[in-house]
Picture 1 (cartoon, helix red, strand yellow):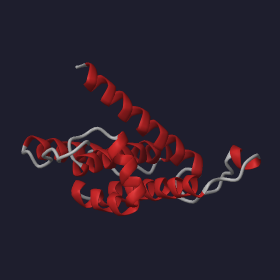
Picture 2 (cartoon, one colour; picture 1 turned 60 degrees about the vertical axis):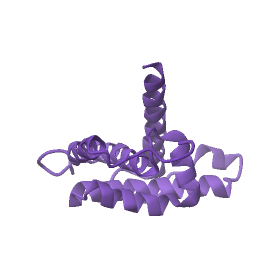
Picture 3 (cartoon, rainbow, N blue to C red; picture 1 turned 180 degrees about the vertical axis):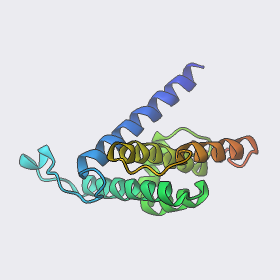
Picture 4 (spheres, rainbow, N blue to C red; picture 1 turned 135 degrees about the horizontal axis):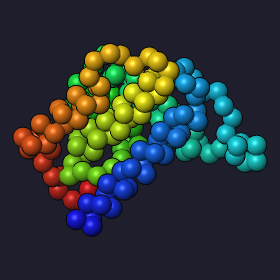
Length: 156
């Protein structure tokens, strides 16, 4: 039980960081970087940080797309896998709970979609009907119960 609490806490911290970064990088609803980072005033930004920010921004845009197009969980997970690239997948495996990479990708999609819905709601642009995140979570739960995310060999 204690391990599960730590895993959930870790996922919440990772989600909060992603949400914060999404909101910091762009004004609401535009998907365009605009604001200057406070650290840029003192230090140049490393290429690694720039790559992380770029991936985060694209995933925020894809999450909004998943909300408006009602994309399936596995289709959105494929988008996220492409955007994550090798470095992003390495980070995903270390920070998102789950027994397989596929499960972790699906969890990442749901976190970003929840953030996108919250932002779209603040903008008054959230589509009507059930929230996409609830549908994606239900799809995830069905797939998890059906055993579609078996553990992978090695550390996850």
